[in-house]
Amino acid sequence: YIAAPENLQVLVGRSRLSGTGGKIISVEAVIPYPSFNAEKIRNDVALVRLSEQVDYPTVSLAEDDAQSEMGTIIGWGVMDTDFPVRPNAIRQASITVISPELCEERLGLDFKPDSMLCAGRLATAPLSN
Image 1: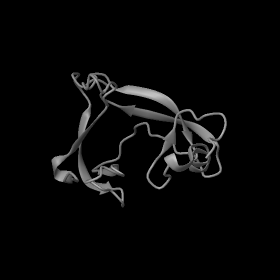
Image 2: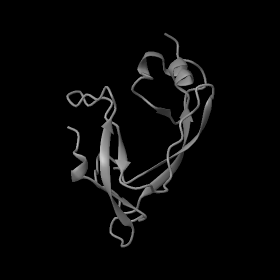
Image 3: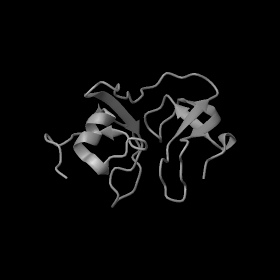
Image 4: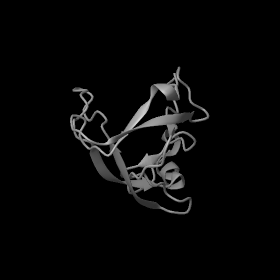
């Protein structure tokens, strides 16, 4: 399932869902990942093109030759699967974004660089096969 742009809006400039202020911006296009698979829920990420430009924080991705760098994740996502309630205040955290090469080296077959982004902490030594 890919949402139709005319059915979507983005709220910017507000850190609390129950607050006031901010601006609602319409969506021009939803661009799904090329190998999105709704049946298996794989590659379920998309770009959303807005009808106007806004300034907001983004996740920075590691360069191909970088071991790692810091990125920022932001959202109202569920933090506890046993209690799936979205928080009222937006959450933000700094994370280490790790290059696909390093992640694949450390995680081996468990990491699929064509459909995964690697972030967090890795073991200090490669896993043995």
